[in-house]
Length: 186
Ligand SMILES: [Zn+2]
Image (cartoon, rainbow, N blue to C red; front, side):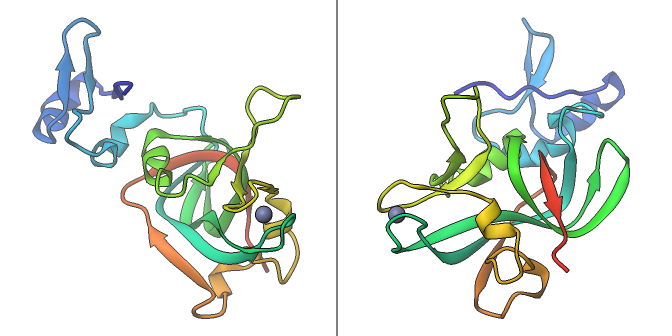
């Protein structure tokens, strides 16, 4: 496993040590020890003004039932939903949005998404790294995000006002950072 290094200003060394971070003498850098979750250190996992476009302290994985676009069998599909967050580049607060076409996630979110191995990068020959997308558990077909997010009636179009019981929300601990397109439903 790759070590997760932390970005800690010197005045916060005592704080990060109190949370249980380990010190790498060679790299002169704090890192997350294996027995602790990166979520504990979320405020130090990425530098301010990082490469991530969206930051959220109230993020969820939304799970729903869908139909595979290819084999038509019932599958689980997931997306990321945030009760609140920030557009990092514009420094604008965001409310109640889903994120589609995700192309970058931080370590905290990567660890959380390990529970949903079928939600992973789409491998494409024309680009080095595709966006995250759901994959069918039966036939492996990619379920493109635009089919799940774009239109009224699409399963993730309006998560904030979804029918009770039609979706399951799994809260994520700590701050997550990711890059993708956010949408608010209507
Ligand atoms: Zn399928």
